[in-house]
Length: 258
Image (tube, rainbow, N blue to C red; front, side):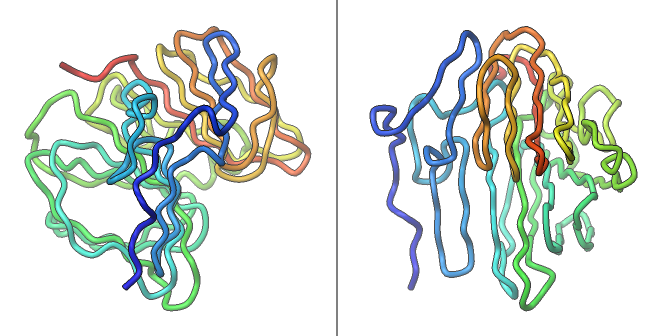
């Protein structure tokens, strides 16, 4: 039986972690890694057996997993409680089923969130028997515990095609879907041909380059799998390289609730 990679400690002495003022670039090679016969997953923060004190979270963002799931497999039914979960599919299709009665397909361009609330059970399976699905799954804590579990989705393909940041999920009612966390918002951008975007300003901003590469202006190069963790930073600009970049950005309050 294939098992996950051994618990890791992200030792800063072994890889470069660049700090430029209040912006910290964390390279792809420094992410935690879990590999099974059906799953290849990279974690931006502590997850499962993988722990390191500097990687507990950034602001309210607790989990940012970059998952590739083989055809015909996936995450079987399992529980969650008091967590806001946002899933963004980059390639392929993911079938989601949960105990609220939701049963549907998440595809590229579809904003999706699940509020676990007082307790929910769900499964996430590759919708294809043969093709891989590539997704980013992200968790933030709710601002109110034990709400009624719920699910929401919205297609943002037309907005995404404009090539700027799209507010995917937010707790203030301004996102494509609403999360139960008033101090957090998630954005995505499919940037083409050296496009430049302005990142949102917040106490904690997390830029993740899912594919492609670019430059965080005045800070440095950010490539596929790299992240920039901005803490109380001034406005930041990101310019994609000529081949473009697909980015996921969170803007949140600084600390975790009580």
